[in-house]
Length: 330
Image 1 (cartoon, rainbow, N blue to C red):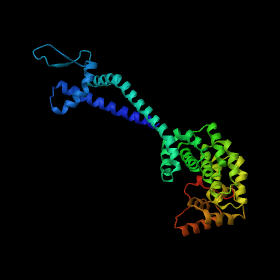
Image 2 (image 1 turned 120 degrees about the horizontal axis):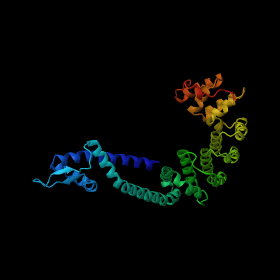
Image 3 (image 1 turned 45 degrees about the horizontal axis):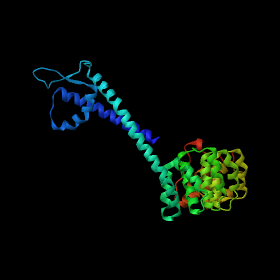
Image 4 (image 1 turned 180 degrees about the vertical axis):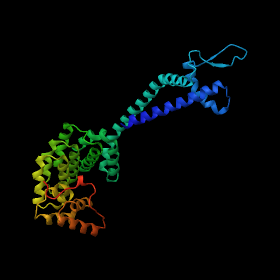
C-alpha cells in the first residue's frame, strides 16, 4: 500500500512539473527569451518539442522564427493539455518500469535480509533491533518467523515469537488457517516467553481454532502466559472461553482479573468485591482503576480512587457512557 502511495505522489509531482514546464517553455519560445536561467528548462523540454512537433520553422527573412504548428488550437490551455498528454504517453512506461524494478529489487533485498535478522536473535545485544526491523518488514516476515519457531535455539524461538506477535498487532488478521495451525504447537514450547508471545499473536488473528489451545494456557504455571492467554481469549470473544475465564475469578488469579478487568467486572457478583480490590492493589493499572470507578459498585469506586491517589494518577467518571462496564450486568 505504501508503494502505491509513493507512486501516486511521484505521478502527481511529475504531472505538475510537466504542466509548469510546458507553460513556461511555450512562453519563452514565443517571446524568444534567451536568458541563461532557462537553459535547463530548454534541455528538459526539448524531447517533448521533437515528439509533439509543437513548433515549426517558417521560411522567410527571419529563418529562426518559431511558430505554433497549424494543428494546434489557439486556446493556450488546450495546448498545455495536449502537451502534457503526449508527454505522458512516453513517460508513463518509463516511470512505471523504473518504479516496479525498484520495488522488485527492494522486495528481494527484504527477503534476503529476513534469515539473517532471525539468526541475530541468538545474539542478546542485537535481538531487540532485529525484532524491531522484522516488525517493520511486516507480513513478508511471517512465514520465515513461523518456521523459526521450531529452531533448536531457544533465543531464536523467543525472538521469532515476539516479532510475530508485534507483526500481528500491527498488520491485523492477515494470516490464513494453515499459518495459524503452524503456530499452535508453539503454545506448548518449554519457554514461557515463547508461549506468552504466541498466545498474544494468536489472539490478534481472531481465529476461532485457537480458542481451545488458549484455554489450556489459562492453567499455565507462568503468570504472564496466563495473562496473555486470557487477553487473547477476551479479544476473540468466543462463548466457549467464558466459563474457563470465569474460573480465573474462582481461583483468585489476581493478575488475570486485573488485566482483563472489564470482562470480570461485567460478571461481578456480590461478595466478590474483595477479590477485585486485591487484584487492583497488586496488579492494577490505570485502565483497571477506570473500569472500577465507572462500574456502579461503590466499593470498587472507592478502591479505584484510593489506588489512583496512592499512585499519583488522576481518574474521573467516564464521559463516553458507551464504553462503561457495569458491575454484574452479564
